[in-house]
Length: 507
Image 1 (cartoon, rainbow, N blue to C red):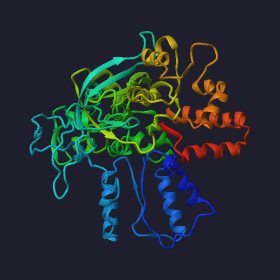
Image 2: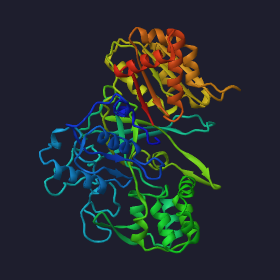
Image 3: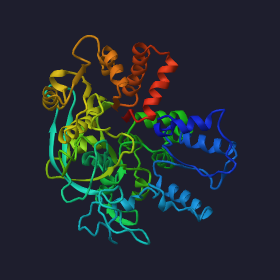
Image 4: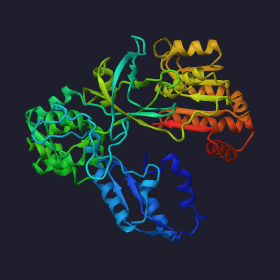
C-alpha cells in the first residue's frame, strides 16, 4: 500500500490516532516498521504508531527502526536493542515472536571455496542445514527450512485463443510432514530467467563463472543472480553505483527524488546497466541489487481431497516495456521452467483470518481470475467432508470461451448441488464491460438475504481495484436492499468483519 495500515491493524490504528485514544503512561513500547524505500510513504504506518504512542505518554524503550527490502540486519539490530532494554521479555513465549529468517537461514549451504557447497552443486538454491549457535533447525516446510516439492502437473487452464495464460500447478508434499488447511498460502522461492541474467552479465562485462562471496559462502556470480538477487527491480544502490562511475545522467538523477522514483518505476535492471555502460567490480555489483524475495500464492487445493499434494493457480505475467518483452519473475519460472519433475523450494504460510467457516454455514465467494484459487480449495473441502452449508460463487475473467478457469469442476459442482449458485462475469464478451461487482449488484437482494440469514462472505484477488469495487458494491447492496444509510451500511459491514463473516485475501 501507500503507507496506510494493513487490514489487520486498521482498527487499532484508528483507535490510537483518534481523539478518544486512551493515555498510555504505563505502557512501554518500541516500533519496527517494514516497508520499501522506493515508495513515497516509506514505513509510514510504523512512523505513525511510534509518534502517536509517545504523544499518548508511552515510554519508548528502543528507537524505531524502519526496515527496507533488505530487512534482516535492521531487524536484528532492533531485536537486539529490545532484548538489551527489556531482558525479562520472553519473546519465545509469544506466537510468531521469532525474527524473520535471514537469507543464510533460508538458503544455508556449507563450503569454503568458490563454487563449493555441501550439497555438491554450485547453485545456491535453498538447502536446509542446522543453524549454528543456540538456534535449532527450523521445521521442514517453513521459510527458514523450505521443502523441495516435486512438480506433478503443470497445465494451462486457458484456451489457445486466450490473451491470458493461467497455470494449474500440482506439487507433491509426500513425506514432507507439511500440514496445511484451506485458506493458507504457499510461499515459493522463484528463480530468475537465465537468459536475462546472461544479458545483464554481458552488459556489465562480468564472466558468468566469476566467484563471489555471498552470505559467507562462495558461488558463481551467475548463480547468485539466478537464485539470490532481484534482477528486475532497480534499487537506488544500483543508481548510486552508476553515479560513482561518473555516469552523468545518473549523477543528476539522484539529485531529484521524484525523477529517481519515476526511473525506478519505469525501468528494470537490464535497462539501467545497458544505459550506464559500466564495468563494476563483481562484489560491488551484486551488493547494489535487492534480494530475491519469495512469493506467496493462495492454495487452490484441500488436504481432505489431496492429502499429499498442494495446488496453485498462477497467472503468467508477460508484458512490453521500452519496446522489449518482459517477464514476471515467479510466474514465468513456474510457467516456463517448472514442468513435471522439477523441484521447487516451498514453505507454508498459515492464515489466522481467511478461515473457512463452519460446514453448515452458507458462504458467498467472490473470486475473479486467480482469485478463484482459495474458493476451489473451499469447495473441494466441502465436497470431501460432506458439508451441508450452501455455497455461492461469483467468478469472472475476459472471455467465457477461453478463460473459464476450472470450468468442468465448477459445472460439476453446480450440477451436484455443492454449488447452489454460480454467477459469472465476462468483461470482454460484449461491448460494455461486466465485472463481478456488477453481477453482485444484480443479485443484491439475494446477497442481502443470505447475509441476514448468517452467511459468510469471502473476497479474493486484486487489492488495488477489484477488492475496493467489490466493497463499494457491498455497501451499496446493504444500503439499497437493507434500507440503511451509508454510515449504517458501513457499521453493518464492519460488524460482519469483526464477526469473521466478511474476510478478504487480497494482493
